[in-house]
Length: 138
Image 1: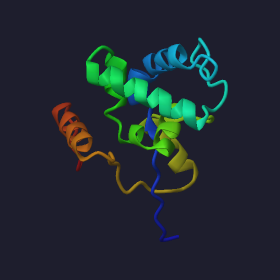
Image 2 (image 1 turned 90 degrees about the vertical axis):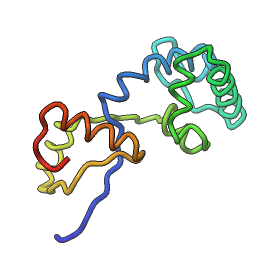
Image 3 (image 1 turned 135 degrees about the vertical axis):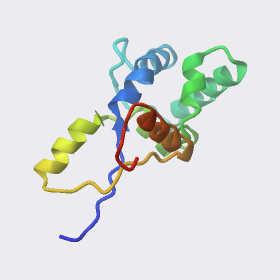
Image 4 (image 1 turned 120 degrees about the horizontal axis):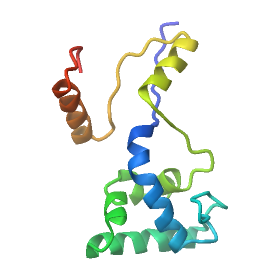
């Protein structure tokens, strides 16, 4: 009682936009790590992780791969731990806001707010919410 829980999660709506293409790219680069169906077969070694990050970054810089360009926009891409979480998490799960609301209610928790780690993404989401007719303090 009286405590505060900060929960960080990936949005299902966001992940569905980039993950399938990312998994296809990762399979092409690391078929022993990511299966043809996008399933994670094993964790990449440190050398594999460095190599795939270098290849994705090179493709993004060259402008030859939209998926690579999207991946390098994630802050997580630029650290080993971050990219492991972003692309190679063994128990990866994402949630919709409705699913989060149900879990919070089941745990008898009251949400205080929702925000995006990136300030520009947070501002865009709030603007889109208001433009769509949202009326509460977004």
